[in-house]
Image (cartoon, rainbow, N blue to C red; front, side, top):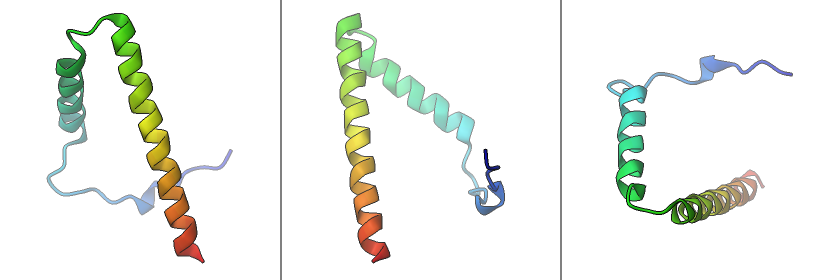
Length: 67
C-alpha cells in the first residue's frame, strides 16, 4: 500500500471542515426526517447513483483533457 502525500493539499483559509460537515448533516437530516425507511433507502440509492454518474463524467472529461 502506498502512502498518500498530504503535502499537496493546502489548507483553505477560513474553511472549517467540521462545521461544514455538521451543516451538511443537518441539511440531509431535514431532507429525510419525515421519510419512511424505504423512502430513505431510495433517496440514498438515488444520490449514490448520481454521484457515480458525476464521477464517470469527470473521469471522461479528465481523460479527454489528457489527450
